[in-house]
Length: 125
Image (cartoon, rainbow, N blue to C red; front, side, top):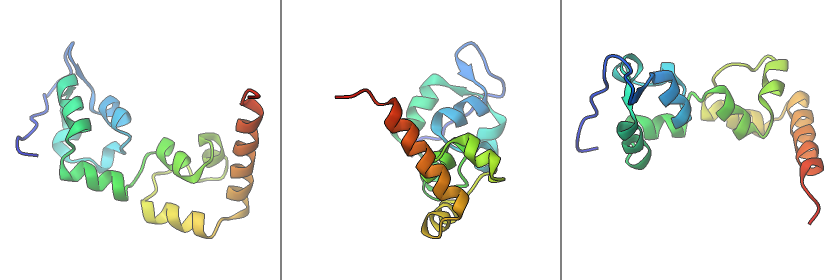
């Protein structure tokens, strides 16, 4: 990114807390740069991060660690299934790929259960 984003020290009426911005970006906040973690993010800065992500954001999205909702999405299971099976922690892309390549029984069951649940909730066409 050609210009540096200067995150505000405190959230204002037009800025959000770093945790909110991280959630909207789908990233794990503790893995973000310190200036992002410590500052507030304006809506304009969030749009800039979404449309023209800096290298740290690209790398974080590619390699992780990923937050719980993203881990669940990548594994094809619910967040509840993650928690129930002791996997309620951030995982890297490599760790997720490893789980998908050599799926433990709980993961196979959770994936099947979510797929069946989605199929039941899909209206007949």
